[in-house]
Amino acid sequence: MKKYVVRCLLLLLLSPLTTAKENVTPEDERIRYEGRFDSPAPGTYRTDWPCARLSFGVNNVREEGGSIDVSWSSERVRLNATAWRADGSIASSEIFVGPKWRNKKQTSTLNLPKDASFVTIRKLTQAAPFGTGIGEKALAASVWEYHGVKVTGAEVVSLSPRKRVVEYIGASDSAGYCADGTPDIDGTAALLIDSWLYDNCDLATPGLLANYFDADLWVEAEGGMGLTQNANARIPAFEGKYPLPYFWENQALLTDSSSSWDPTDSNNQLSPDLVVVSLGGNDYNHQHGNVPSNETFSAAYEEFLLKIFSAYESNEDAKILSVCGQGSPAESAFDPDNNRCSPCPHVEDALNDFKINHPELGERAYLGFVPCDGSVVVGDDDIGCAGHKNAVGQQKVFDYLQPLVSEIMDW
Ligand SMILES: *[C@@H]1O[C@H](CO)[C@@H](O)[C@H](O)[C@H]1NC(C)=O
Ligand SMILES: *[C@@H]1O[C@H](CO)[C@@H](O)[C@H](O)[C@H]1NC(C)=O
Image 1 (tube, helix red, strand yellow):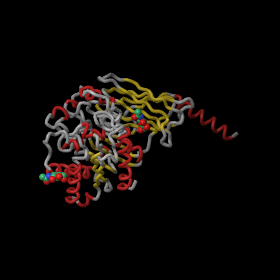
Image 2 (tube, helix red, strand yellow):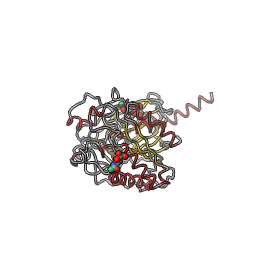
Image 3 (cartoon, protein in one colour):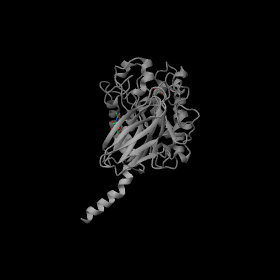
Image 4 (cartoon, helix red, strand yellow):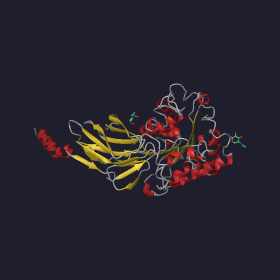
């Protein structure tokens, strides 16, 4: 009897909270952000990086369920909005698809089942569907502007940070380019302008690793990008003239040169435990012989790893994993100049040089070579569009890398 009375009192006390609607602004401290966002104006946060995400907790969802109305504007953006139960299982999930051309504010709704415990909204699309050359122009950029949420029938609470932090720096495979596509999708122009319909960073190796290891995830990855030069470097207008380390060091948004970022600034609150560097393939493939010398590549690799270690020097246990490979035996048939494993000896040499030149830091740098011989990715049923892995292929790469990450990180 006493218990019953207490419960009724509690319900009475809680009901005004949980039936109300609450508008939560992007600046609200209960919202957590992963990945590079900036704020062009009060009330708006924006990002273009794949896998960037926001999250918040929900308490006391009312008996009949609640809802989350997400206010956003975008161009060529898809978002994965998911409500999770406390045990990590999924309570509800929606893919929000924005317009192809820039729109005004729109609202998308996620149902909040009674047993939901927290909500995540993750960007699936990479920043520049045309590459950073043409894609840097506002015409093509996949920018997600977030204006806040209206929460109905639940109380919004803060979430504690996840157990670990992973930063993932790479090119198309790391961005999840074509992971949602199929091999029959054709037409270079259509693929480029519509590629945002097939990107899925959540189901790519970075998203899978972060979910598995309960890690906050910061991805700076974009198709075609390299360490010393981008793919098709002889046509800079296409993939852009700057390789990825330039953006890592300078810009909050890949496609906005006026957005600034300083990885050494502690206000950015990024102190990763693990930084994955999956760069090098595009430096060598599709270059018609115009490739960096071994010395140039090794020196650039050394410089980049030094910058990463130095930016995160407050974490003396931070480690770097250099990932290379993850192709299939069939891909040279699809595109002879796209053997993902052919650049790997250069990456391995560069990493070894780094270890020789910097023995102490070198102990925290590892090679994650993912073979292309068919023992991981087969090339049949695990390929999405444009010769890139679908979710099945990405899962295979994750399955291959996960034990290695567990071992080197002791996770
Ligand atoms: C959305 O995210 C959840 C959690 O990561 C995942 O299980 C689900 O497959 C994703 N949905 C799509 C369509 O990518
Ligand atoms: C450059 O490195 C590659 C990969 O290790 C090696 O096969 C090649 O012989 C090297 N070239 C020169 C000129 O040393």
